[in-house]
Length: 276
Ligand SMILES: [Zn+2]
Image (cartoon, rainbow, N blue to C red; front, side):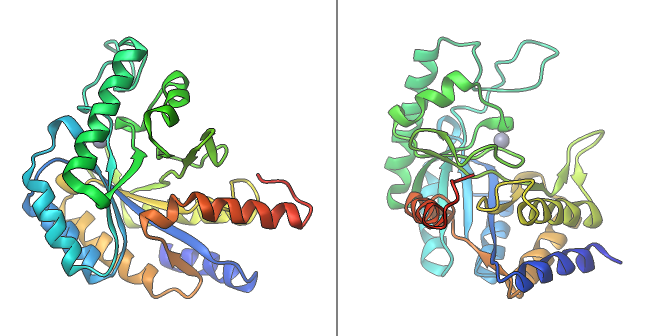
């Protein structure tokens, strides 16, 4: 059985249960118009697949705003800009896992820089900016998470199944679960079986209650470092997912909609079940 067959079988279970498997797509590290970004935007347009583009505020070139507004005009799917940290600088001590949003800098300084970054992205991208933080290397300390709502951020996105819908009051967490790249020992495409397996595992965990059923399953890409195998697979994957009746491919604003969450919670409490 191929990875595609296994994923199709999992989706058949969703379909038989009368459930809709929600999926979304995040791409990280955008800073400037590049050929790779054009290729990414072309795939979004080709498959009418909504895209959350995590942009690094302090490294972002103003020309990116023009590129994205042109892309939005040509694309029926939503392209939303998310905030990718501050400057994507590693602040971890040598030998520890890379992170920017750590305790290395005073909390007030970090929050000020996050706020400035948010203002910059809101100014450059206007309505196209969603106040969602994507921490570089998907790592962030709890002390910073607690301060994000006061900073104007309403969403958080890291990697792997979320523990709860709200990372803090007013802060909806929607992660990604299938990173298409392998980072070590050398960077490249993860592989078809492995990538499809990540999607299938999260969907199955949602369906069988090991993960929050309401968290959309997220595809994670990094356009600047894709090899040809990654591009080919991403093209095929988006086309395949869009053809599956059990799947609803969410726009980023749908994935991070607080009203959708409230409605779901109301439905659950009406049915006598508390939210997960
Ligand atoms: Zn990054």
